Amino acid sequence: MKRGSSGLSLIVGIRKPADFTSHDVVNRVRRIMGEKRVGHTGTLDPMATGVLPICIGPATRLDKYMVGHDKTYRATITFGSQTNTDDAKGEVVKQAFVPTEIREKDFALGVLQGLVGIHMQVPPAFCAVKINGQPAYKRMRAGEEVELEARQIEVYSAELVNITEASSADEPNDSVSWIVDLSVSKGTFIRSIARDLGQQLGTCAHLSGLARMSAGRISLDECVSLETLEDLKESAALDPVRVLGFRFAYADDRADSVSNGAALSPDDVTLYESLASEADDSLCACCATELVKSQTPPFDGELICVLVENKLKGVYRYDSRYRCWKSDCVFAVGVSRG
Image (cartoon, rainbow, N blue to C red; front, side):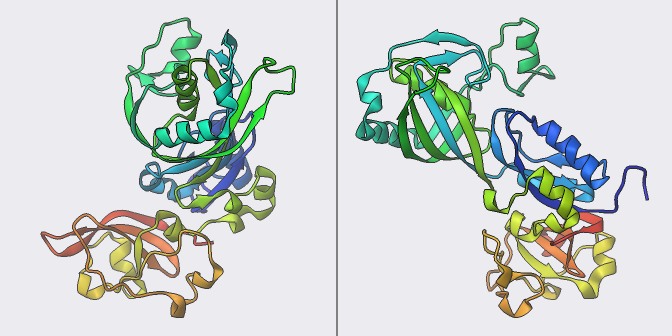
C-alpha cells in the first residue's frame, strides 16, 4: 500500500461548519481517514455552511463527473450596506437608504421571479477565479485592482422564505434582509447575486448568510459533521451510483475485463435505471428485486456505472460508432457503496 493510502475509496457528504475553508475540511478529513488523497467537488466560502461533497482515495477520480452538478442554497441578502468582499466577512465600504418597497413581500416576490433565467454574472473580486494562474483574492490582498469577466450562469428558481429587519448592532438601523432559497447552475456566485440586487434596487447589499442545501444529488440531510465522521469513518459513505445519477450494470462475470479497462458489448450488459435522487434503503444495491431494468437503448457518449462485487469498479462511456462501452475511468480499488 502506498504511503498515505488508507485503502479506502468512497464519497462522503460533510456539513461544512462556518469559518472553515473548504481546504480546512479536506485537511481534517485526511487526518480522520488516514488518507492523503482527499478532495472536494465545489468550493464553499469560509462564511458558508452546508453540503460539501468529499471524495476519498481513488474515488477522487470521480470529481470530474460531479463538479458540474447544480446546487441549491438558502441565502440571506441584507440591503443597506455593501462590503469589499460582498459578504459579511468583508469591510463595509458603502451604506445606503433602503427603499420602502424592499420591505414588501409582493415586491420581493416579483424581483426574485425576475432572477430566474440565464444571466451574465461578474464574480466577486475576492474569489478563487484565477487570473493568469493566480486566484483573484490573492491579487486583491496584494493591493492589485482586479477586473473579472462576466460569465454565463443560470438561476432555476428563487423563492422568498422571509423578510426581516435588522435588530442587532451589526447592521445599520434601516437594513432589511431577504431570506431566499436559490437553485442555480455550476459557477454561480450567490455573493454576486446579492451585490447585483442591491444595485438593481437603487441601494446596496451584501450576502450576510449562506447555507448550501444540496449539491447535485447530495442533500444536507445526508451529510455528517466532521465530529460524526470521526465516529463513522467509512460507514458514512454515500452510494456513488446514486450520487452520479447514471444508469448502471453489474459485471461480476466480467470482473477481469473491467479491471483491465476492456470494452464491453452492449449485448453483454444489462442496464438498470438510475437510482432515485434521494437516499432510499429500499433501493440499495443488495435488493436486486427492487431495481428496474432499463428498456432505453444506449446513446452516444452516455456514461454508466459498472459494478463488480457491489462496488463501483468503473465508469464506462458508450461509443455508437463501434457499438460498445469503453472505459472512461476504472478503479483498482472499487468505490464503496456504503
